[in-house]
Length: 54
Image (cartoon, rainbow, N blue to C red):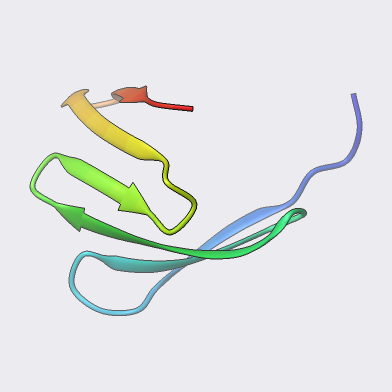
């Protein structure tokens, strides 16, 4: 397995800037749902468990 890097920086209430090997993206969370600028949707089912599209 190769090297990977991922860092998330809070940029306001429910808003994050995400840095990784593949570039920079942003995400916005509303309640239990998070949507990123890359079109990924995540839903928090309960603490520690998520469902993620794509």
